[in-house]
Structure formats: structure tokens, C-alpha cells
Image 1: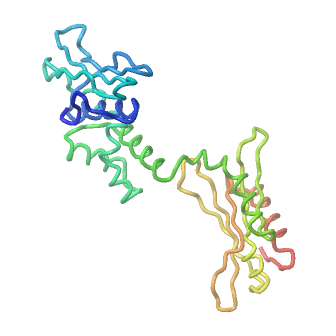
Image 2: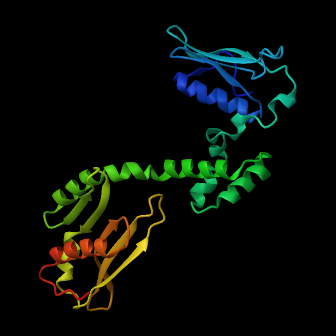
Length: 260
């Protein structure tokens, strides 16, 4: 645990906890939390009750010195004690190993993460652990998708206030959960008046946790370029939701003869 020394200070007890756990795990050693409250945090050897190992690391938050490491005693037990230690399989410990790889390639396979961990860090993890590592890193990069749904009402209000000609509609279920959202920006609505009398519609699955469907309508301009008219995010691609989409599409383009 070269990164942890007595007297080392931290900005908060939470930061100290993370540093202590990471330092121990990097040494492929194990620990259990002996106590943790608002002013103290201490870890000890998992076999302390069965052995004489006096290992401990303690961080204390005092008014005089702030958050500092006040005790650090190394392990004296057999290295076999730490074989397959649970903490070196934790998501918090594994995530920094693979963050750069996932950022570089968000489509990296879970099996590749398993392989990288084994080859680079001599640590064998199962499929579920590698999957959780990837999901944690993706949430850090892109945010929590479920939280994004809750932001749709505010986003639509801002979207409409930016231009009164913007069209957006939101469908909320009886359980107060997000169902679908429709968008037709003002600029595209104005352009739609000058497009050819043909509208193409299509839908595709999104690669997300909730498997939402993206519906889109497009037209063709005088230069034979494809111009998007409107799009919507819906739960499934069936007659009910296609009808929902087309009703708002027609309402957004009342002066255009749309052929479906």
C-alpha cells in the first residue's frame, strides 16, 4: 500500500475510503470494514478473529487535522488468505482498469473486458462482473438513461419556448411513466412546404437499455436530398404507435399533402 501513509490527508472521509480500498486492492490483499461512521473509517484483516494478523488501516476526521490516515499496520498473515479476495473483483476496483478501453470503443465486448483483465492484471473475473464494469463506465460517460426520461418535460418546454413554431408532444402513461415523445422543429416545418409530395417513414430499434423505437419521417427536396421532417421515440413498433406518430406528423404539416 505505497499510496497510503500515516499522516496522509484527504479532502473528505469519502475520498479517504476510496483511496484506502483501492490501495489495498492494488496489492491484491483483502480487508473487511471494521467500523465506518461520520468521523472514523477502519479496515482490518478478514481472518483477524482466527489469526494473529494485526493488519489495519484507519482514517479519522478531526477538527484539528482534518481527514488523515492515523494507523497503518501491514498484513502478517499468509498470502493464501488473500487468494481470490472479493475486493479485487469489485466493480469499483475493476472499472479504472477498463475505462480507457470502453471510452475508446463503447461497443467493446464483455468477453474482451474479461480477457483484458486476465492478461493485463492477472485477475480472472466472470462474465457478470465484466458486464457490470462496462455498464458502470457507460453510465459515467453517457449518464443514466432512466434519469433522461424524467427530463423530457423540461426539455420539451425549453424546445417550445425557443421557437413557438417548434412542435413537440409527450405521452405519459397512467403510472406517470414516460411512453413516447414526438419532435418537429420549426426550421424543418418551414422546409417541408417546399419538398416533393412524398414522405417516407421508417422505424428502427435503438441500442439502449430500454430498447426504445425511433420513428422518423423524411422528404425529398428539389436537389434530391433527403430532409428529415419529424421523429419520435416510442416503446414498440406497432399499429397503435405508428398511428400516434402519424397523427402528430399530420398536425405538424397541415399544409403539406403527405402520402404514406
